[in-house]
Amino acid sequence: MNSIHHQSIQTLGRDLVAEAYAESDRVIEAVRWQGNGYVFGVQWHPEFLRPGDETVLDPTPILDEFLSALRKRV
Image 1: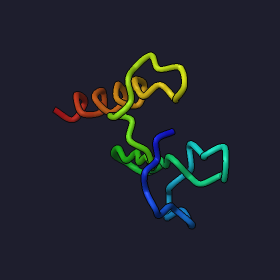
Image 2: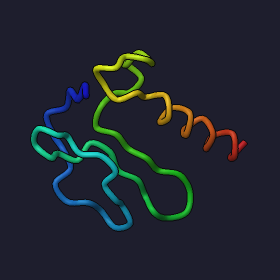
Image 3: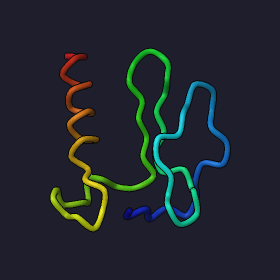
């Protein structure tokens, strides 16, 4: 991961579920809202990662899902 934040989620808000945790300290790294609409939050910066870099989580599925959600709204 490339989390560069000094703060993290301690308690999930209503209708939020954790989708990813840091292996080292179990800090929540990704959340998704279970309500209507589209809300997906990450604690790291997938846009900084290069697709195909096997040393980190591949950000392509996250970016593809986001773009797909945008297309549905247009």
